[in-house]
Length: 636
Image (cartoon, rainbow, N blue to C red; front, side, top):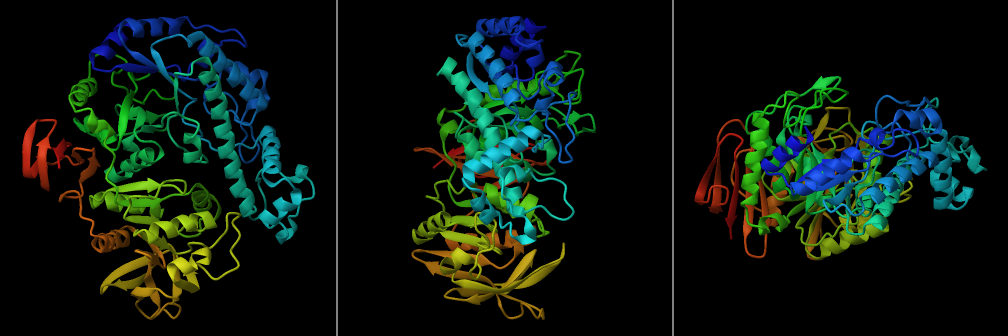
């Protein structure tokens, strides 16, 4: 079927294929014995049909002989049970043996194909840490001790950083230290934080080894990876790559702003970026099967991917696999090999995007709001101190701003803060002097910084700072936190902002003004909070710092977003309902507004003027989007 498949791929408008990532058992059926015939033939056919190739290193799914011959390569779970052969992602990145075997298969592939002209890029492995993002094998413990020695240099420095004098956890020899393991009550929090840092560094080192091998074989090859899963520091991983890619499956979310989140994340990690797995039908594995995308949704989802900044898109997959654990993960074709409406939708999409002006693809997103993320703080929130029972506010902010049709990006501590009007840094408990300095420079230059409860509470070792909260942020915020309480799940306390009720949840704080001005006070008769400031503002240079003494749910986040928009004079990109997504991108000559209707009903968009590029029609104020419709309006 190969020749016919590749002809149909080409005829559907695709100009490359993605191959090889799960084929280790084919390439190396027994140790040291390699074969490449099938892929030689595939690449030769791709050359004849003018298709380029992204090749995947196959190291996420090893053959049975690997674990049978070398059982020391397996991951172990938290209870120290080996994850044996029979699935995927069951090998430890810290295993010297597995690293050596991965080097060898990568080297064999690199040497075989270093002159193959159709190959322009390599995908390293596949979805690092998908399914399982920890490992507790003996090799992991040995590697963890080495990582700790390199970081702390002395056992005394480690004891100081971890605060091991509490509960007599003091170590006097590196051999006494294990990865976190089952204990009666809790593991040491900084021990767990360093575990996640170690896992991320181990994954990144593993990635770098393969990238180095491939670049040595052919420096022209582009290196990428697909998706960001648990226990991997995204900005650190991106440094090892030439461009960033993501795998986008909208059916895992219940709403469009939910599955927009990873696209916003992707462009924060690399712009433009690529999609190596765009959902091509209903997804499913052994225990679940998703709803089938309705007619028009595959095109809509792909256009959303492009709207957020993808310059490369690959559907996963070409044909639904008739066997194995992903036989319910549908491709553009099914096992019967007949043309489908899904393939027709993909082919139609190709015609549309090739007709667009080239500058559409490189036009950067308009800067306005941004939400700051931090690997250490997210690990702390999800794995170490999850006692605040409120929504993950990073996701809430981005959803509410997207629904309000306000440009929003994600930033990281290493990002350039320039050009943004508002940066929201919700509840970064761990803060350091370098980050505070970036905050200060951003605000003094005219920006608005929004901080939340518990900001600045801890240092980078997760130790509570020995100064009144918000610690290093006291001068910048102009407040001191004098008392606080953690509310039960679904409980709120009411603040009054501009006379309107604004519920706050999670950890709520009683503040004392130290230069700031209260813009909201706690309402009600709560003896801890009554009459105290709930939200404050503090002028610093040409900008201001807003401190929110609690956590926000969806409704209160939407309300505060409107308050911020009016304060910095930011208007929505368009006027439309919440089912419409609107993204504004600007080249040197034009503004491109991407409009996507995520509803099965027509939607009207107001306050939009220009030329709609997909239909080549003039828009003068109002535009009607059909069900699952898309428009790209070029204007000034």
